[in-house]
Amino acid sequence: MHWHILGAGAIGCLWADFLSQAGHQVSLILRNRTTLEQWPGDGRLEITEANQQHQTYCQLETPDTEVPVRHLLVATKAYDTLSAMEAIQSRLQPEAEVVLLQNGMGQQQQLLEQLKDISLWTATTTAGAWLESRHQLHCVSRGETHIGPLTQHSPLLPSGWDTLDITLHPCPDIRPYLWRKLAINCAINPLTALFDCRNGALIETSERQETMRRVCREVEQVAAAAGIELFPEPLEERAAAVARATGDNFSSMLQDIRHGRRSEIEQITGFLCEQAQQLGIAVPVNLSLLQAIRAKSPGKYTR
Ligand SMILES: NC(=O)c1ccc[n+]([C@@H]2O[C@H](COP(=O)([O-])OP(=O)(O)OC[C@H]3O[C@@H](n4cnc5c(N)ncnc54)[C@H](OP(=O)(O)O)[C@@H]3O)[C@@H](O)[C@H]2O)c1
Image 1 (cartoon, rainbow, N blue to C red):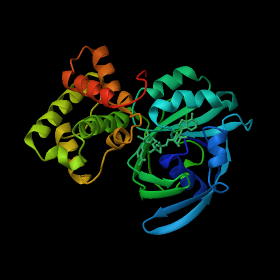
Image 2 (image 1 turned 90 degrees about the vertical axis):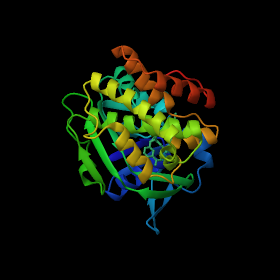
Image 3 (image 1 turned 45 degrees about the vertical axis):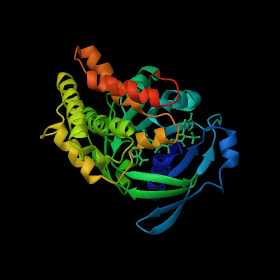
Image 4 (image 1 turned 135 degrees about the horizontal axis):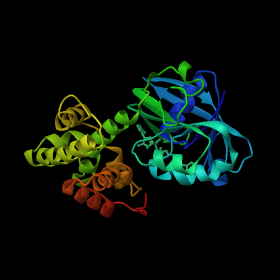
């Protein structure tokens, strides 16, 4: 099986390793020729995991190469999905298998509308990874990954994924899992960016706890109206437990804002607010968070 990976960042390189270790051929599609020319080495990835190091080799290419794409993993940030896909669309073979592995919601539906004749899956993961440099990857955790098809008649898993050495949960209906991840992200990420604090600091003062509680109540109302069951316990309890368990971490949204990068706020709180509007539910706390984070983030805010 030949898997192409669009988005050779931390998660893309992590999956390049998983797919490669499972015996698949892997090609990383880099943004452009400049990125290709600046890429260190010859496609070697150096992976550090649990104080052990190993290497994986990938082929490197740019979007304009003519190699047909039959199996594609998309691991860009959510807001880059459509433009990145557009650049390789002509290479996608009929009935190509495409997997989206990203945070956030909205981009999945947009892609379904843009591309016909593909088999599409979406996945959400608790894995954690970061890049020390382009080709030096640190795997913090392999986590657990939920995946499910978004197109009718697609099997539960894409080709070859049954051999990956990760905890993979195939889900006939992936939507609730995407919503659960979205709900936790709504409860934690924008607030850490707003207060410029670690996750754990969100539950250290009664004022911040109260803000998180109000965010969570709105998210629960929208999810319920969308027919989604979130968690057995109230979202505020689950979100507080996650904030406690990841207390020392800086959320990706806070890191993006601190580094002047665009954040995924539109695909997280933005998606939630859009759903609320369609369902006729008022979400004033989430709306004001959306505006506050937009004001702190660079970039264009169209979804
Ligand atoms: N990292 C984690 O631990 C983690 C965990 C769970 C979920 N996630 C989610 O996974 C997704 C990816 O996260 P990440 O941390 O891997 O992000 P990342 O390190 O920023 O990687 C994104 C990659 O996409 C590339 N890209 C963007 N547009 C492209 C285009 N048009 N053509 C080719 N490549 C393009 C970027 O290239 P350039 O560098 O050239 O811009 C970058 O290498 C996000 O939705 C994130 O929220 C991440």
